[in-house]
Image (cartoon, rainbow over all chains, first blue to last red):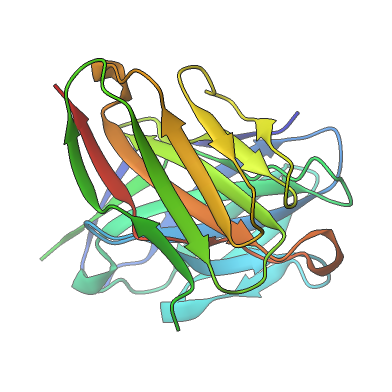
Length: 115
Length: 114
């Protein structure tokens, strides 16, 4: 079984400052990894994904994440946040090559941008 | 560009009433999912389907039933609604095992049970 832990439920950060949202996962098999963003009163949309290859993944809106297999982490980063980044961010995992194709989400991290 | 469409968007039910939430996708995806989102709990998987005619239980299946009679539709039923089922429900779809990629989400259904 897989599980996802997002270590911070809320992260306040000043506008134009850097931010890191942390995600750790647990799995007995290899996994695909995802970060989704949810703006207020909207559905989820994909920020970025790691399927294979380079461990540094770039996504939309200037976000990037680094896959670290030894630490089972997939932290999300942005060098300079904007007020429009105010949203909830979800880390998710899905097992490779498995017919039992669940996607398991973390509990989310709410990003608050301070002026 | 419809993608994943959920019907209805809002609903208020009385305790004990039944209802069906409809999810439709026009991307010919094999896999479909129903999640519920509650404050501080993230998204929890209710049921999912890996193809037409198949369904499987997720993390929180109790009180819900699903059906996937057509590939493009995934229905979530509440036979006897309870206040604990007040939540925002999201449907998602994904191509399938041969083309692993991300899931695409609908806009959600906000359900209140009074």
